Image (cartoon, rainbow, N blue to C red; front, top):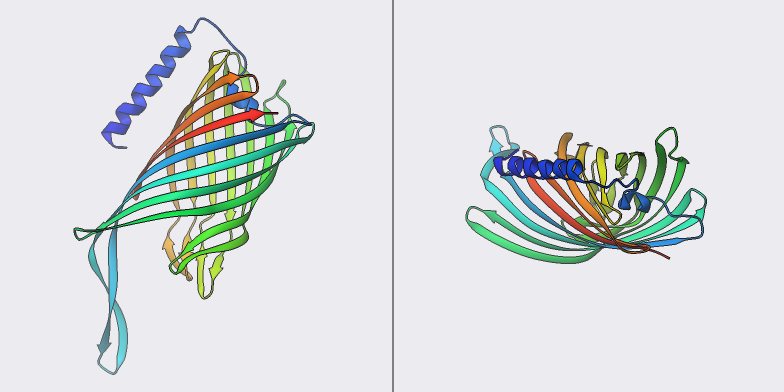
Length: 302
């Protein structure tokens, strides 16, 4: 981890610990935990805006056809320079939930994005802006266990009915190619809530004409802690460990299996009854890229 991220992480953790031990009031519920599942007969909506900044470097290669003695033609790869990518990604999301029965909710979600990308190769910079519909999906969550003697347990299943995939020849809609299974468990020890979330995402092959993209399958595990500072404010922090499988384009592997750890911070604030605002921050630094994400979300029940 770069020194600047280490210092930032240390300062934030120290500040959180200070708040925990100097707070004189204890509250049992974390604001954001209440958003996990919707009560029977109720609706819940949320609008979110997230900003992601990405820095990536990779060696760029090309190939040349060489004719060998005997008429054999082979392709020889060669290095043409280091490609640097600086990207700003804005995502606009809307989700609507409905509590169907006690412990069971159905939901749908839609996402759009704006992508501002700058690519530098051998001192030449190219820029491109993209504004597109991203995806539409549906899902369901069910509370298997309520929090009592044992931690609460909630399972969820979702599918992307539409994915707007980017190919070399442009974007193309693919249907029901992404599926996700998740488990959330949490337990309250006044005024702290311990939460553990696991998620597996299956990405099937996408096609456009003769082109094909096979995104990697993803599994993540995220332990987090929520602390109620007062009746209206909650702060949270934690880690997310992710393993991502192989991905390929036109049957050629473009990335091997990788693992990474990102750092999570955030807070929730109750604006008024049945209406909360939250912000989440995620830092990720790997050998391939540096990525920072800030998300704002407004949630209301009706």
